[in-house]
Structure formats: C-alpha cells, structure tokens
Length: 218
Length: 36
Image 1: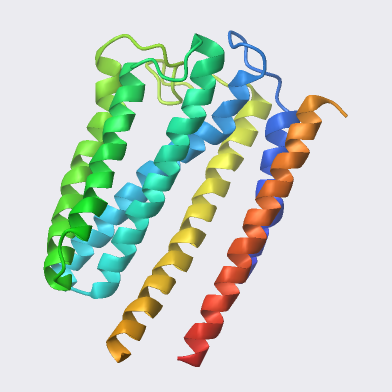
Image 2: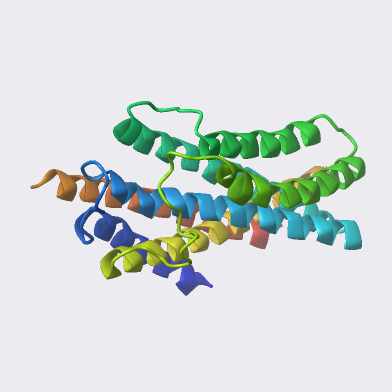
C-alpha cells in the first residue's frame, strides 16, 4: 500500500507534465483549451466515484450499523463535493475561453450544479441532527437516494436538450474520439485521480475514527 | 522556456507540494494510531 502511494508521486507528476507538453491541442477548440480535459473529466469521474462509494458504505451502515461505515460515507461525500466543485471551476475556465462567459446556464452546467446542491444538502442535513445514530440513519438513506438521482443529473438531464458542452467520452458513436497521446494521458490521469481519491479517503476516514475514539474516551 | 513548459513546471511543483502534505499527514495519523 505504501508503495502504491509512493508511486502516485512520479505517476501524477508525469501526467501533469505530459498533459501540457505531449498531446497536440484538439481540433475545433480555441488555443490550448482542450487540455482541460486531463483535469476536468478526471475530477468529474472522481466525484461520481466518491458518491457511489458513499452510497455503498451507506448501504453497509444500514445493514451492519457499524459507525465506521457512516464515517467513510460522510468522508466520501465531502471528497466527492471537493472534486465536483473542481469540475465546475475547471469547466467554467473552459467556458470562458470557448464561449466567452464563465457561466452559461448550459444544461450540463446546470444539472451539475444541482448535483453539488444535492450533496451539499447531505452535509447540511447531517449537521442538523445531534444524535449520532439518527444522523447516520438519515444520512445513509439520503446518500442512497442521492446516488440513484446522480446518474440522471450527470448522464440523462444534460442530453435532453441541445448543449454547448463538447462531446463527452461516453458519446452516441460509442467511440473514444481522441488520438493516441491524448488517450494515454487521459486514462493515466483517470487512474491517478482515482488513486489520489482513495488515498485521501483513507486519510480522512482514519482521522474521523481517531476523533471519534478520542471523544469516546474523554 | 515556453509558456506551456512553464505551466507544466508550476503544476508539477504544486502536485509535489500536495503529495508531501498528504504523505506527512498520513505518517502523523499512523503515529497517533500507534500511540492510542
């Protein structure tokens, strides 16, 4: 495990350097703006993964009532929100270059903003309940409900009407429309962001357990 | 140095900083787990 974490250092350093220096900018995009794909899409992927992990651990809590599961679920939602906000920010930078404005109320922007609100509400809801058992029960049920809604907001709603957003990796042609260097850096970035997420999740949830144990002992 | 090389360098430095921060945090938590 330690070596996997250490591997992240050269892996992500190579991804970051390559994303600026290796692939040619994609055709049909202004300047170097297409390079945002190496950060924006992995952030969106990591956020979706985090929300699914939160749902998994929430189901785990509902079944086993282990406080550890609730801690991991909450941590996953916090990290998911962090990556979702980064997705919005990187998307806004791209929008400014391509469409002249940071925010355009594009269907994909709007549905993603709703996703951020949906998961922010999870944290507000938890903060409003003092009793730990009740907070975990309500939080777990909400995280499962939100995960059911998430694919609709990410995959369905943005496709209902015309959008300014460039074609996504999952597209009607069923093909990944990237040249070989772009594809290599892109998938390496996805793997790196996934590894980074699981490392951050591990750190945060261990910290949450230490805090709980400290509170219990006094 | 071209502007892309400059951006790549700055971002690699930012990443190394984030890695060192996470690594040290990880070690500190391990230490506290051993001491509990």
